[in-house]
Amino acid sequence: MASAGCEQRSERVELGQAAASPTEAPHEDPSPTMERWSDDWLVAQAPLYLDDPGFRRKALEASLTSHDNIYARTRLGSYGLQSAGWDMLPQWVPRQRVVDAQLVDSLRRGEGLELTGMKPIWDGVRPSDYAGWVALGRAVFHRYPLRPEMSARYALLHPEVAADVGLREAKDGTWPGVVAFADIDGSAQIGITCALCHVGFDGQSAIVGQARRDLDYGRMLLAYHEETGVPLSPELAQRMASWGPGRADITQDDDEDPVAIVDLWHLRNNRFLTQAATLTHEHPAALAIRQETQILHTNLERTRPPRELAWALAMFLYSIEPPRSQVAAVSVSAERGRAQFERRCSRCHSDANGGGAPLDARTVGTDARLAFGRARGTGLYRPSPLIRVAEAAPYLHDGTLASLEDLLGEARLRPDYEHVGGIGAVVGHRYGTTLAPGERTDLIDYLRTL
Image (cartoon, rainbow, N blue to C red; front, side, top):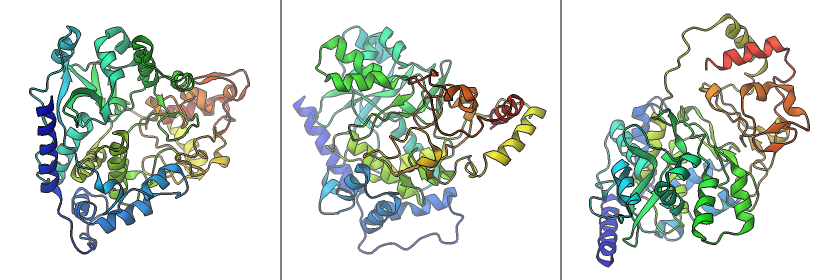
């Protein structure tokens, strides 16, 4: 193990040195005549983020909708300082291998997790075109470990737990969202990746970019602690038990504000990122910085990813397309619903992907804990994008409503209403709840075509 650890450290330093090429002076926009957000424009913007420390700092500051929450203050105090903070963390290019049926079978037979066959996720060569960035980003999305996760390893070893919490094998034999890797100390670990939450399933077919709405991450953590006896505070156990499938509380505070896992369709069109509009998305560096800091923070600030990997991950996320719609033709009812939408909904859901400019959370009127929370609160909620919205339940930022009928129905306003999070009225976002039954049907039929 000691030898493997030394090899890992040597590999990390070598690749980090090869990747770093900072410039003395800030770059000007290298592509002022290109169409913004086109593939070529994105490639041309890469050196700004990768090579210009001053630009990265300014991009961070510009991306933070509020500078007063924990998320913003943590980053402002640690990111882009050049001679301090997170810039001083060692870059890490982990050796890894996919978790497949063969590996899972060996673990269930009691065989140890071997480092043999694990390879670095990146060779240190910076891609030169959009396709190359996307290919590298796809590897990061599926195989870059966010951290070791003993609960995922426990679920892999116990098929009944894996099935219960939504950890699943795809038809190609891989287990999206988990990866075997050599940790920074050289130990062989099972970890989690971005794909854990953002690869859904249609049967055994994996759908990259779709929220995994049957994933009960809190239940997976609890199963590990309950069965192994590893201590867990009662307060934290209670929070985890309250999340339920498709929701998680990943904020950096003690507030109970679980959020629904979201789809990743057409992110280029999102003017703001996260349900509370925590980030203003005016440049791809906003998304790259988010990925870079999320990875290093999740890994307990032990290392940071090479920025090439963070940029590549952003490019891959921009490339994700939803599955082709199965709606053969728009019905008469849906056409009437389109008119309802234009008249009643498009003022807020005005963007190409059905999202829109953030609204005062008090105007939206839904549970305001996330919007005004200490972790990522801005006082705002972002209108959710509506691409494949019929498949995006549960609805609202906290995932409390199980169907479009629930979202647009008056029943949820009653005090005895049973919803995803318990019993009680689900107030706010009353748009559509006063429609006549036929109008509501028309609107839902239209939403099913998006």
